[in-house]
Amino acid sequence: MTGSKIPPIPIQPSIQHYAWGGKTLIPSLAGIQNDQGEPFAEWWIGDHPKSPALAFWEDQWQPLNELIGHDPNFWLGSSLQSQFGDHLPFLFKVLDVHDMLSIQIHPTKVNAEIGFAREEKLNRPLDAYDRVFKDANHKPELMVAISEFWLLHGFQNEKSLRMLIGNVPEWSDFLTILRKRGLKGLYTHIMQLSDAKLFDYLSPLRDRVLPAFQRGELTRFQPEYWAAKAFLQYGLDRGIFSIFLLNLVCLLPGEGIFQDAGIPHAYLEGQNVEIMANSDNVFRGGLTSKYVDVDLLLEHVFAQPVEPEILKAKKTAQGMIYEVPVPDFKLYEVRLSAGQEMNLPAGSPGELIVIRGQGKIISDRRNRALRPGSVFYLVPESSCSVHADESLLAYVGTC
View (cartoon, one colour):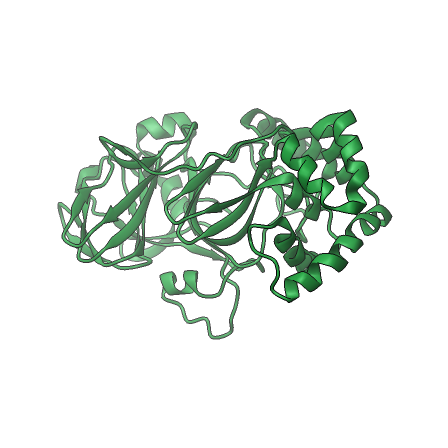
């Protein structure tokens, strides 16, 4: 059976109920009642063994990773299989961020291979609390906002840092450290502070910003706003310093940003689609109840100023695409008005998710209705198109 004769395959993504998640977006996409107000943080569309999606195949729902493992040539295609092995090279997600996530970075491919081999040699369980390298892969990420989305991304330049630090009287000695030891020296100093010093530096800031936050005097464009939220969520956490050190970015719907290895970042609030290399390797630097390894973080962090690059989908012969500098994944935007139709990219396996609108996905053998939350797997060399019955927004993850 050739790929072109296989219609799009329905997918049931897996749900991650992390505490920071929202309560409405993912349940609405998944068609689930959330009467208990449980947090629905991430919707995973992929074959990651931690939480594989289900595919409706041979009249039953089956784990996608098992299906791919049984016949990788069919599900992935020989070209992709030879380059990346017997699994999808990417993981596709929907995120609903109600409360801020941890300050984090990801390793390079080389460092991931070294770190994973080291932990495997020690026979450490993959689910150990303090295990960082869960696999041998890097984890570059692309996220595209589907609502107004706030995040931290990369260190600010020295001029901006001096201005922000100068506005916090208790942090005046940080200016001397920045001048003498540079950005890496300052970040190292902050990340290695004792609990007693954290109290000295953070408690006066907390006492100032929390009343202003509660009176509604702060806006999301001020780091003090997010610091106040972090104080309420995490207490005197060293990750709060990063709110002032990193670039505060607001993305509008349809805008994206790419997180490469070593770039410190954190999601603060909003909803997005996200596609990344198929990995779970994360080094955390605070604002989390999960494991924080300061030495490992400092070893891998890119401690240089970064100017955030806001991405928009660009028109190509294959469709509207967000360009990224890695081969592991691509993200296409499908934005149609009522009555419009477009062919979906073919050649590599893909995953389609509809965010809003109604329509149909059309293939040689059958048509299927589309609604918000419809998810399909597109086998290699499949030929299909999307028709919009009303204004429709969807995304296709592929590579």
